[in-house]
Image (cartoon, rainbow, N blue to C red; front, side, top):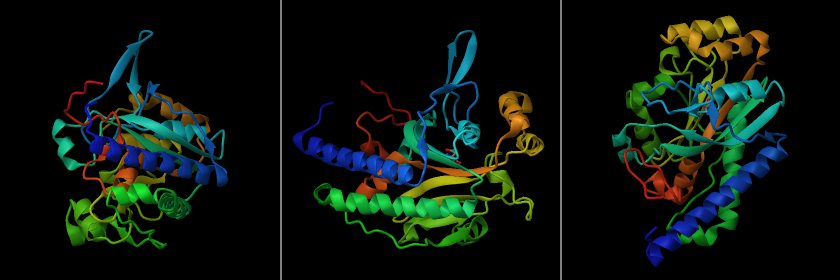
Length: 304
Ligand code: ASN
């Protein structure tokens, strides 16, 4: 940690903001009736994701365990016990080394991951907006000096945020719409209705519109890209099995999820919001690595 005085001051300001973000989000969710779960770090089953992320496995007790890529399946099971849950969940995703250039990727990061039994996408979008507005207002009130030192002018966006369907976003900005749309946006923007083939199998297909999912992403303005991702979930065993097969995955690998679903998974909806990306946006940082004291940047080695 060879930081100059200037670098140390900058890092301290960012970490103060991050601590405030974590505290405000926790306070907001507890006030909304959410129960905080301790995170799951190793599990026999984790999120398959849609992109090519190397698997991170450890061996213990004669079995293989994944390091968590997201707590999605644990969230679906957890809302069978508590109606509304959240966790500050560490995720390990061994991304390609050149992703270090995106400014948006760490291979170890924390997402604030939450889920609501019987929740709808619209309720979760409303919650996401209120959560973001609450956290930004709190940071503006308590971290004025830090934001000033970072040269960041931040305003609290007005709700409701504009919504685009995936098809509209794609038509206007092309397949790589995320950054182009985010650059043009002056407020956070929702993207909804992803087609079935571009998302994970656990996002629920709209029974009224086959091939369209009841899911959503939120993009930050100013080019900061994705803020959160989530949706309603598939919870019936035969539907989950069909979606697994549709993606060319092996249902045998998801035996645990399928037997949970056979026992009865409740309908639910939820989302995850990357903590470091939120801090990057709030502080106006060029790279998300600045939001960690010990960042894990794709392709880079670390001394500590
Ligand atoms: N947290 C996300 C969700 O709730 C899943 C993910 O991180 N891939 O949908």
